Amino acid sequence: MEPSELPFKIILGSSSIARRKILAEMGYEFTLMSADIDEKAIRTEKPEELVMALAKAKADAIVSKLQLSGDHEKDAKPHMLIVSDTVVVYEGMIREKPSNEEEAREFIKGYSGKQAATVSSVFVTNLKTGSAKGDFDKVEIHFHEIPDHAIEKLVNNVVISNIFFFF
Image 1 (cartoon, rainbow, N blue to C red):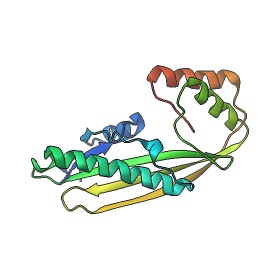
Image 2 (image 1 turned 30 degrees about the vertical axis):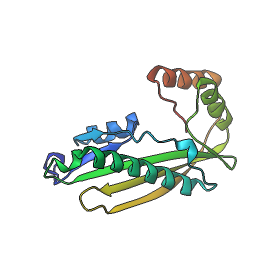
Image 3 (image 1 turned 30 degrees about the horizontal axis):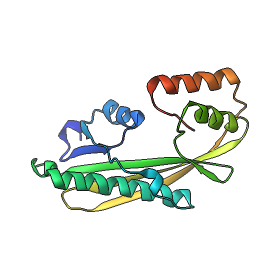
Image 4 (image 1 turned 180 degrees about the vertical axis):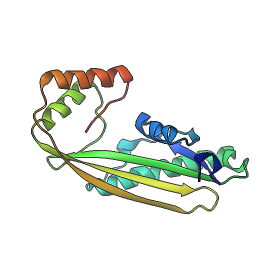
């Protein structure tokens, strides 16, 4: 089935340029919505539980916004809401997006010659039926030494695009 023939519309609850790019390059039309939640208020010790809790909280916030506005009821096509979250686990500690350029530099420099893991979740909600399903995935990453010039290039590219990139 071609993306334009889908029996539903997609709402992407993400500010991630990468996620937008993936859907757009696949030919999907979608609407962007922001959850506007305080992610720091949601804490768990296990990264798998954290990314799932964050994704669910984002979905709940967007569903609430939609219910208040009634936007998803104006269209005959049911909507699918897709949200996700990712954290890095480094030396047993959960790392979320760096808060500034210096922290981004510190994170990347720390990964040099070491290993880390990303834990990501995806949570999909059918806004017509209310059914929802989510899951997570963990990926181990082994880094070679990262030269200082490469770290600076990564940090500068991140600052220019106003997105804090982390591994």
